[in-house]
Amino acid sequence: MLSNFFPLDAKSIHRLSTRGLPLEAIKSQIDESIDFTLELWRSQGLDIVKYKGYYYFSTKFIMLNQAEFCIVDIEANGSDVQKHQIIEIAALKIKDNKVIAKFESLVKCDEINEHITNITGISAEDTKDAPNLKDVLYDFKVFLGESVFVAHDVRFDYDFISKSLMKVGLEPLLNRSLCSLSLAERSLASYRYGLSYLCDYFNLNPEANHHRAMSDVVTTYRLFELCLNSIEESLNNVEDLIKFSKEAKRFKRPKFDPLLL
Image (cartoon, rainbow, N blue to C red; front, side, top):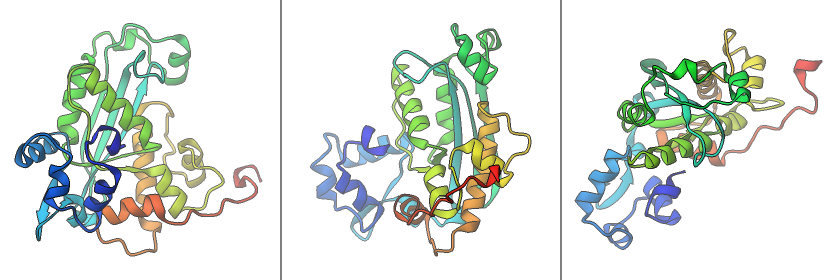
């Protein structure tokens, strides 16, 4: 997700998360001064620090029990961000296995078709007194801060929010992100990895109301904790966990659905 909105190339992004990037490599890809650029990126949720002459994502030096993870879910009145909008957003901020903050809001929307209402239970009437999209996104961005953005199939939520921010005149997200679906594939054996299936199989959230944002956030939070407790590999910092979620070997899926046996 970062590469979609970030001016540095893929090789530079990789070096920021591993062995560090020299100043010259950053300067060759930006138009503004380095101090201004780093401050701008920080305002978009991305903290880059200098260590022994090289630049790194600050998450390279943040231990897992000291990191803030923000687990996010959105509901929208369609899947095309150019035509549709967010109608609900929810998030839990997690640190050291504890919920430290909560964000939840409906978003004013004049048109929500019957199909979406049937799925989410949210109608246009439900949102008539809700704040508008720009206000909700601004408040959410402040809430998110520099936390690691976590979601199930994170690309959709991250990109939809970032593009929505740009639609209302705000800067897109640059936070480091982590996909709980990819993490689950590498830390848990399951026949399927959709959130609803994982919820049922591992009994993550007995009171789940799928396709409502906070309910899915709670389920994802419990899945995230289960994944972290199931990883046998030694992970020292946030970048280790992000790398594991992308590169570790996936579990082999059972041939038959155990929930149907």
